Structure formats: structure tokens, C-alpha cells
Length: 105
Image (cartoon, one colour):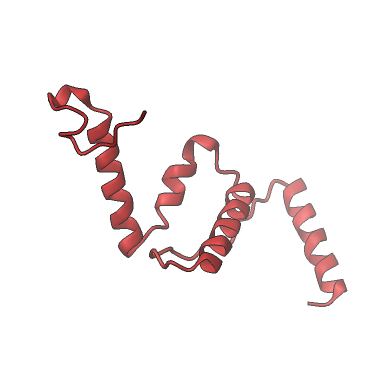
């Protein structure tokens, strides 16, 4: 993309936003749990940019982000949420240790 193309692109975005025409950022790729910090860092940076551009509110960030977890990453998230619910629910009648939760302190 040469400089003129970029200038035209910026002008188009400014015109669209001033005339009430919204835009939708490019959809992000899914995350399958790959353990490569370069991939994770790129994904997190892209997610931040997307959340900002799409004006996703703070209350919706987790719901939005977890929708991009697939495969092992999705399974891990579900297990963590189950453990969290179990560890924060003393009404089960079990001690913290019996519930499999870490004792802090």
C-alpha cells in the first residue's frame, strides 16, 4: 500500500464515521491452546486492538474473548470455570481441601 492509498483509507474512515456509517473490524483467528508465546502475544495484541475498535464494553470482554477459544483452550477454560465455581461455593458442605481447592495463606 503506497502513501496515497493509506491517506485515502484514512479519509474514507473519517468520512464514514462522521456520516454515521460504522465499520466492523476484521474477525480474529481462534486460539486452540498452542503453547507458543509469539502466537499468544500476537493474539493478545490483536484482541486488544479488536476490542478497542469494536468498542466492546468492559462487561462484555470475557464473554467476547472466550468465544475465540477452541479445542484444548476451550476445554481448559471450561475446567477452570468449573473449579472456580466449586471453590467459591461453600454450600456444598465440603472443606476447601475436599473440594480440591488451594488453601491460600
